[in-house]
Amino acid sequence: MRLTTKGRYAVTAMLDLALNAENKPISLADISRRQDISLSYLEQLFSKLRQQGLVSSVRGPGGGYKLSRDAEAICVAEIIDAVNESIDATNCGGSGNCSDGQICLTHHLWCDLSDQIHQFLSSISLAGLVARNDVREVAERQNRERDREQTLEFIGAGGA
Image 1: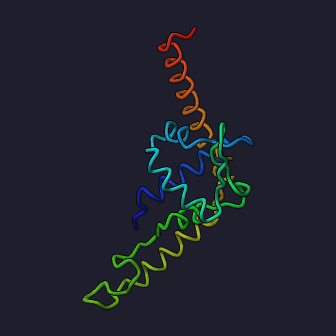
Image 2: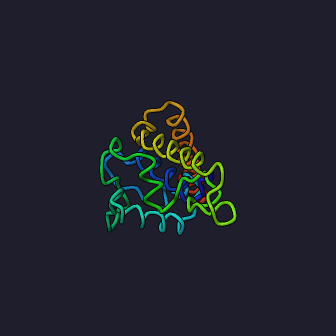
Image 3: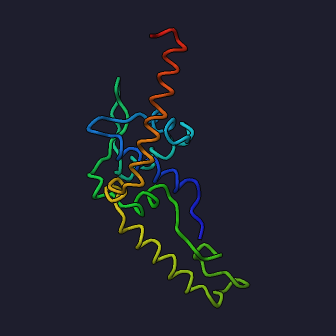
């Protein structure tokens, strides 16, 4: 089973959004800095997430993105599906041509595993992840690091 960078980054960015939104839009630049994901890549991902109705954009000063629904109503599998990522444990991409153009002996086993993984990720909401202590600790560390970087930039620019 392989989950590519696209799916991982989409879930990471959506979790960052859920953790930091506090009733205001979050800029992709902020997510990019906190998660070390390129801004252009985030723009591509959020275009797909917006098309699938998972986020909404707010234009203008102070603009950015917000979750389009409560974090409880957005599951991890839905995010992965929105960016056209598949969770597939087969060697054939689910097409059934794994052994000389035909279904291999274990094809259905790997299809069943893929289904189980999708069901598992469907049972995990963004709110469930936000509630986890380990996730909150990482988010707090990232915010401290961001605050420290902003302070250093301010001092370097002649402030204070």
